[in-house]
Length: 228
Image (cartoon, rainbow, N blue to C red; front, side):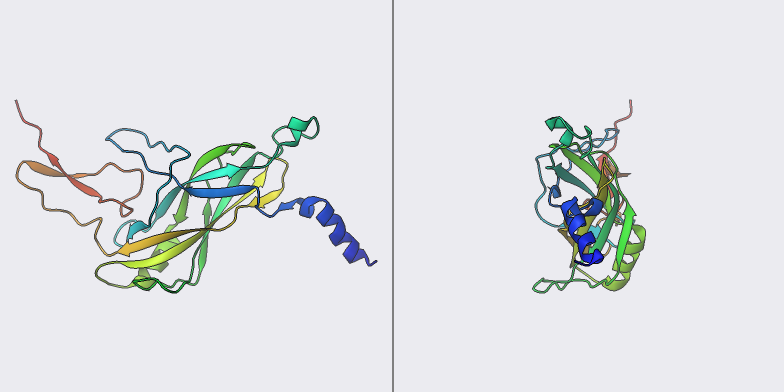
């Protein structure tokens, strides 16, 4: 048996020489954004998920954030009387995003060939636990490329993001999630255009957990407080 083949077999026996295939750490889905009131903090709960595409206005900040539930299904070796407790606690280090090509979308998908890497929310996900990680799926660089590819348009255009969280376990093993796809629709000015407010209301920035141009209108018409 050659030395190279022996090394490969030893690596397989040792769980891939410190690399895990991601089968035990998984992105379950985007959690629902809570109702936001002025001055409140944004909190996200596990177990409640948002269905359907997001919306990105290419006239906005050109960033798109996702609060994702991540489940850690690994068993901690410390619980069985051996190993180190916390060895399989997992944390993300980077977010890799690409625009996934696909057919059958109406309207047609926007095509962007490059991918991007952004820093990750490194909050630990304990073994057997669930955690919401607030990540940047579309950073400024990728957002700028998406805007250029979309051009000037009316109505909506579509794309699909493929998001992978790259991370490590407490014992140093590299462990990435599988790629999670997320549909995203684009508009050109629909969320950041200033509305004309009716008499008795005034223009204000709407409270949100996200940057301008993501999912909800940036502005809101609020009732003018009565003067005494």
